[in-house]
Length: 487
Image: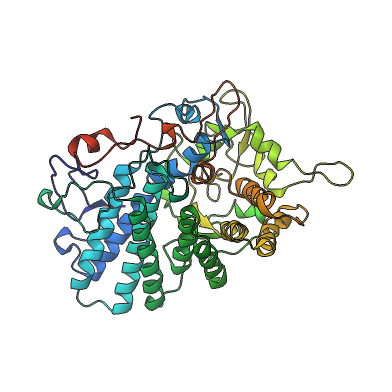
């Protein structure tokens, strides 16, 4: 893809990650444009939106870190130390954490610039404007949520004496240094309200645009699904259930898979369950050092132990593997969980052969090239099950829980209520979404301690390392921006 500079700026003494930036809108649009026409034409704003999608491919975002690091920080993943990557995160070392602050604010600013420019673009139908606006709102809301998950507490478990609030809210675009405001951290509630607003407006604009949804781009179902996830984190169980229902009812993207197609779905170029998925072109291969395939497995293909590909830096813990084999039938035999089939013995080419996760095994045989599901249909059943259970609707929660259990090959759960029901939902959430970037965030939003196998020490929820450090350059540049405690 050709790099197109929509604007070039030099920002001095910057805040909100603009320090050292010379190309704030350095995007790689799928349809390149001339910088003179930047954000004044339909082609320009479409190219700018495509550039924001390219930001999401970053290793700091969905290219690896937001998917793999949550497994390493929590109790799902164990670092093998075959390359040294993710070992500090696995040990929860100070400063070994998420680092997507700068990349996220770059993309947020790009979205803001598109939103600011849209009303002035001529010769563009209202439907097309609505579609562009909907995408920009969705991505902005998504990234503010990802910032909150990493750098702030969730509202239901905020530790008041340790909390420094949410993250700065950048609501309009910046194209030169004079426009930069030294913002402090907005309150947690204010950031969640802003995210709610973005998703609400995104849903409305997708609807009015009349566009057919595809998981390769932001879409109405994705906005509904993300609203459900955000509401669950906020402890807003009414909206968590409502928007999960809306997403499931839409049915335009994401098809729930059967047990027979469960494993093969992960071998497809695009996961059939994806509601929103990060797309990579053939020339955008992340490579053998940081792709999800190399991070999770040494295999180049399922069952092929003769050829070594990646490093297999992060493998499932014994506790996770045991959880897949924790149920037995009447004869005392372990019930086969189809999800366990996605974990298999890797090669010895990088050292000791380990059981490895093969959810990301190279798109259509292209090593180290996978499209990344950000949110898929199965999560909607789990979101709604948890929301209903916490709202006292045990029957409804059981129904959704059993959609996941029976598809996995487990018998339907019966008679569960209260804490026992919630615990089973959380267990199935762990098993269903393992190695997709959920575990640490789920434990964090619930205020749970992370128990790790010796010699690695446990991480209590009250430990300051639960929150990521804001980059030092941001703190030094802005007296109004407060660092998380302990850093």
